[in-house]
Structures are given as structure tokens and as C-alpha cells.
Image (cartoon, rainbow, N blue to C red):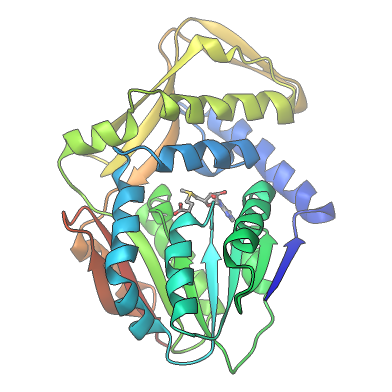
Length: 332
Ligand SMILES: C[S@@+](CC[C@H](N)C(=O)[O-])C[C@H]1O[C@@H](n2cnc3c(N)ncnc32)[C@H](O)[C@@H]1O
């Protein structure tokens, strides 16, 4: 049993990510319409709120993926684990769903190292603490990395004896536009070896009313999650955004095939951001897009695999066919 944690987000790397954050805010608020990318929301507090969202019964992506792991854990074990392997998870969050697999792998006496990677240092520290509590006394090796996806992947020691199995769960891929998703998957392909596996969680297109309820919970957690982005801008960039003058709403957009969340300014107002040396003007009810969650068809998933260099091995669905974990093999 060994649990290790490394923070790759210090020094020059932390400075680079602070600069990226500032540039993304500058570009996003200068755009018409205003648009802030989803990845900006995931600091430690953002990850905590997202964990609460995953517990909402109406948030089907989390509930469906839990169901898939419980139902298909033996299939996943048989597919992926012929020999000693490294289980690398990109954007692991609280790792709660993955624990279903870890538990089953341990019970099946598989030999593997678990490497959760997340940009949120708090998320990785929490995973390590939960795993230590849950699996102490078991033969589990964990190396947590607080890092950007590809910085984390590049820091992993290459071991030709160990096959890599990469998890990218929770429909995180849906936060990217299709061309960006393909570019991301090609970059991942270039860093993996022939015969390695990836398993990606895709939320599938379904009745727009189901999508609407999933992203507009009556408890207001999604609103809290999106408004938190304004808190981060206030903290990180010395802004004076009055968050109580914004409200959130999400909706499916048939033109982009994505659920888009917006923060609406409830009044005409001006925001100053010290670190950018700029003021931004909002009209009453002017929106800022804060989330983009693409909803895939099965055909698009197969095409995405083929176009980015993978063979599709298996599609694992929940009982309603709302969500799929798609298993691909790297082809070189
Ligand atoms: C939608 S959540 C999914 C969390 C988890 N995989 C799940 O299924 O519950 C996305 C996760 O990716 C992390 N993340 C976002 N951008 C990242 C990046 N560039 N590098 C590493 N992690 C990132 C976030 O901190 C967050 O934990």
C-alpha cells in the first residue's frame, strides 16, 4: 500500500496557469457575446460544489455513470486488465465513481497503480485522503498529481511492462467543442503506446426537457456553481463583480448540440478588473456563457474515435441509454 501526492502546479507552472486564467477572462469578457470557458470554474471550491452536484438525483450524467460502473465492472475488468497496468484518470474530481472500479479491481487481485490527475490541488488531496481511509490494508499504489492533464501525463514514469489505461469520465469531454475534443484526443494518442486503452464518459443526446432539468436544479446548486466563477475572478484578478446582480440559467441549444449555461446581468452595470486594468460594461439581462456541455450521438462517438486514432472496443450503456462509457484501444 502506498499513497503519494505531487503538486506540479507551483513556481513557473502556477504563474503560467494564472496568466492563462487572466487571458481567458480578458478574451471572454471582451467578446460579443461574452463567454467564459468552463475550465475556469474548477478551483478547490468549484470542485467541492461539483461534488454536491453529482449527488443530485436529477443530474443524470453522474447517476448513469455510477450505474454503468456497478453493472459493468466485471466487463471492464475483463476488457482492460490482462496484465499489470497503470490506471490514469484525467480530471479525476472526487474519484467517487472510480472507487467502484478500484474496489472491484482489488477484489479481483489485479496489479495496478492508480494515477489521478486534476488541476484542483484540493480535489487530489481529498482523493488521496478518501482512498487511504477506504483502502488502507489493501495492496493499492496511488500517485496523485495536481496538474494540468498533459503536464501530469508527461510527468508519469514510462514503464514498458505496464499498459496504460486512461479514464476521462463525467462527460468532461463534452465541455469541449467537437474539433477541440478531436485535437485533445489526438494529443492524448501521441502520448500513449500502441495497445493502451482509454475509457471516456459521453453524455448522449436525449429529450431536451430531461437535459433542461439536469442543469436547472430546484436547489440552485448549478447557479451557485456558475456564480462561483465570478467569485474566483474577484479573488484572483481583483475585480469588483457584485455577484448578487447575476442569475443563472441553462438550456439545450439545438444549433450547437450542447447544453449552455448563462449568467445574466440583472441590471446595467460596470465591472472593474484591477489585474487587467480594464472595465467591462453589462447591459440589463446581458448574458455571459459559462458552460458548454456537448451531447453526443453514438455515430459521432465512433467517428471521433476513428478520426483521432483509436479502435472502438466496447460501448457500456446505462439502462436508459442516456450515457455511454466508450472503451477505445490506441492504434499506432
Ligand atoms: C466535470 S468534472 C468531472 C470530475 C470527475 N471526472 C467525474 O466524473 O466526476 C471535470 C474535472 O476536470 C478537472 N479539470 C478541468 N480542467 C482540467 C485540466 N486542464 N487539467 C486537469 N484537470 C482539469 C476539474 O478540476 C474537475 O475535477
